[in-house]
Image 1 (cartoon, rainbow, N blue to C red):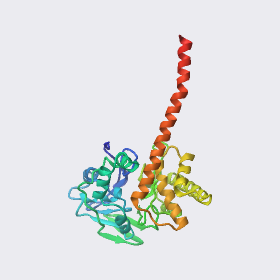
Image 2: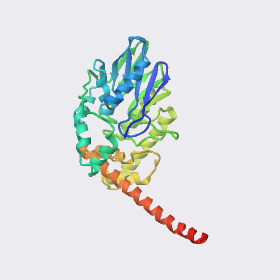
Image 3: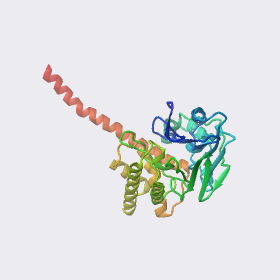
Image 4: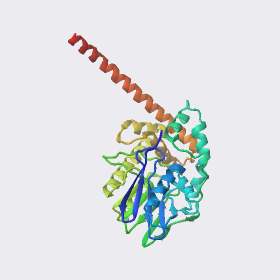
Length: 348
């Protein structure tokens, strides 16, 4: 599977967003703020090929002699961090808490080995190949932030202020948001997964939580007064779009707590919420396994699982959903067959 060329759009004065052309794992949005003498990336694409594409697009929009010299990383998932290697001299900025997630997640080369070397007949091996096989990290070295901070950090890119705020654990344990007051824009990272009627997105996958913190982070974004909100994945949103996302998060939180009270396991609770199909337009419903599992850990005081154990559950539920879809398709075909035979007899 290949990824078509991403779309780079100007969304405000000297502010551009790199939007992958489809939804799916690893296809994160990135930003470019272009000053007269300096430029800033907000997040990076997942692998060197995509990052090189974004870099070429960025340089087309920069003045002569200007290059990207700083990268703010909204969190330490590889699809927002690992592309920084194409700018080896750029300063990489992240929260201090993001360092923990870097150590928890497999390295790029370990991930590449897992994707290419896992048993393709197993649920996990099949899932990794289908959703991550288009990326290549075989030569990607781990990326380590040059500057870490806690709380708030303010930068300037030319005449433009950049306000960076670290958050309590939400999508991961080291999230931040980037507020650009001149442009009235916020880059939200994976605190928000964008979706609109015209361009549906995917279900979020939250690793840390609790969802109360994710909702509070969304409300903090709205409190900036920003009119343009760039989510970590999916289409750019306006303020009503963020309110709709908060409603989604509230629904998942309410159902998770109710099913926890009813005595269901986290995995069965995720299966139940998926089966209810409250948001059928969203892709990758199996990712609710991660979000519901994180919420259960806060309710029960459980330990953070190994990432492969968590992804194995995601892959198993995805296989169950595929089997269910195949069974539904066969049942529809069986229901149509008698009608087709009756039509044949009627016209004979």
